[in-house]
Structures are given as structure tokens and as C-alpha cells.
Amino acid sequence: MVVSHLAGEICLLHHRRKASMMSTIALLHDIGKSMILLLKRQNPKLHVLIDMLDSGKIGAMLLAKWNIPDTVCLSLEYQHYPEFAPPARIPAETRETVALLHVAHLCVDHLKGSAETLERSPFAAEYLQLVKAGAASVRDLVALQLLPAMEKKFPSLPESVRKLMLSRGDAPAAAGP
Image 1 (cartoon, rainbow, N blue to C red):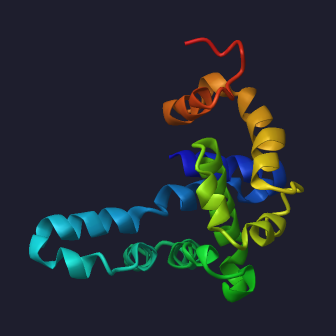
Image 2: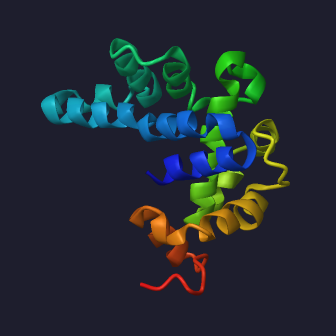
Image 3: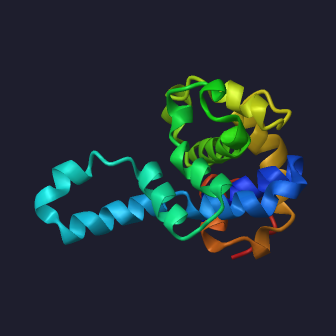
């Protein structure tokens, strides 16, 4: 939910026409993880093999079966690539959506105080540049763009987003309970 909200917010700031699509992709991006958990529950003796499955690929296959548009399926299939590959290694037709999803994840990790995620993301700067956020770092994107935009609508944000902001002291002073 939080990744979806931040992906949508990044798009509202920089790619207005893609905000709805990115929010939807981000909402669906972990559906493969849910399928893997279900498979483990149904097949406990196979958990070692099931752990080797790619949750992004599983999610993409499931959504393709449901006739979800290729852009969404490909975004899920390639969602883990930014962890180990530069943007050029991702198909051009889904490169921007994968980059937006990755940057949204990095922003969530930053808000959670997970600095090691940024250190393990060797291509973060390239993906940040690809989304045309105009920020030098994830920290700048969060502090200078996302949080000010989100503060304006703090009361209407989902509880999970508000809690994350409150836990970091990033909520507006007049946010209330």
C-alpha cells in the first residue's frame, strides 16, 4: 500500500498521466509473493523448491492469465532487475514503470530508516534520473518533494502511510492524532 501511494505521488509530481497506472502496478507488484506463500502453505514439503521461485515472474504470469495489460505484467516481471542491473538491461517498453516502482521502494526504505537498501542499490542514481524526479538522491526526493506534497493531504492518506510519516517525525505539526 505504501509503495503504491509513493509511486502515485512521484507520478503526480513528475508524470501526471501515469499516476493511476503506477499506483495500480505498485498495488499489484507483490502478488507473486502472496502466491508463493500460498504455495508453501499448500505444499510444506516443497518449501525449499518454492523459495527458489521468482515472485516477480510468478506475479506476472498470474496477471497475464487474468488478461491484465502487458505493461503491468512486464513491470512485475522485471521489478527486481534494478537491484542488480542498470536501466538499459530492462526492456524499453517497461523501463520507466520499473524505474518508478524501484524508486518508490527506495523512498519507502528511506522513510523506514533502511540505509543499507540504498547502499545495496548500485544503480539508484540511474533509476532516479530515469524517473526525471530532478533530485540528486532518494533522500532529496523524499525530503524536498514527496513529504511536502504528502503533508498537504496528510489527513486523507492511508493509515499505513501516516504511521510511517509519524514514525520518522515527518508528519506536519498540526496533523493531530
